[in-house]
Image (cartoon, rainbow, N blue to C red; front, side, top):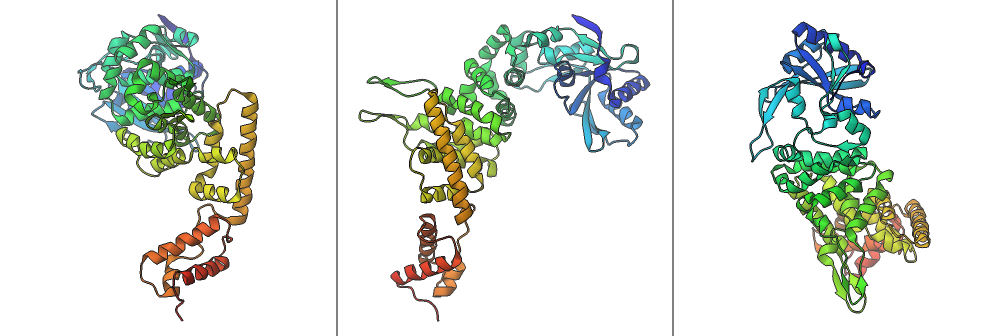
Length: 481
């Protein structure tokens, strides 16, 4: 056990002095615990939230802290959890959320991750923590301000880059199965290894993840996706068996089949390469989700043909349809975010096909029309999809994509197809030919759109009007005098 090392430099912010004074006024001991301490010792950017544990009432301590602060901030109280939170103004336009909780010990029922809570000591509170690196506490008490309390050698685990549970990992993970996801998330975020016993315990307890809500699981998946190297987390999810429960659409891609000497690539590991490739190029979690799911349609569409070998015809369309069901199952948002991911998956091969062929204006116009404002994201996804290990091919594909990108700029500047609005509206067609809502209106609008996309006419009203009149005459429609 490491104790009594002083880390006063971690406690320079005034909120700690004020909390220390409030604790003395309230005659309770208190400590800053968890992620703030961990990140200070790792020399990472400090978290914008601080957890304070009081050996006594956390709610009462929060109120006393608020009373000592100049602006007397409002204290949010969560009685069911015995916690309270206030927002401390660290500097103009800079805020820190400080959460206060009374030290406690917990016991769990098999069917729930919600514990039965009792008042406890600091030791009890550290025992209930998920990992040794999150059980580190710094004293805010006047007599030993800044001293580290480290009962599980968490500092040593930080130095050795190890994720380990304070107590028996089977109990820790069975009590709260979300901790299995958190272990993998921290391994991905921090570049740490999960200690062997702990990793084996995750595999043994993987089925327990079924009691965790989709929202909680997705929150951890998002954090894994946002890691610098997301594949670290997804490989651990796969190796422990969690991924097969959470995202079976991904694990269905794993493996290589051989028929008559012909094989296909392992689309699971290819997917992880794509996610790693896209990570340095975007902080948009939904674009990273698009990379993760871009090939999920390949498992249900995989077929072997004696003439051409393995095929995945229509996998983009099938995959795009699968996105909604996956989002529904995991209780993910079914709004524009889901539609964006589905669109990215459906269009994921289009620029690749363009880059392998002669880049025609009409093909580029259709790509811009279908992708709209997301065309740049789509190109980023497709460039990340280049995972060939052949340096010549890699260079050639990237060069071709640059040609496609340039062509997109040229065509868009000339034809203004992005977020296409037809030069002739349905209302104008109705007025021109004295029509009521009918199929003819849709036919004319579609004909004008196709003519613009094919380059038959420019995307201009005058040309579109003349084309409309020409087509209308062939359809037997006459202009209203």
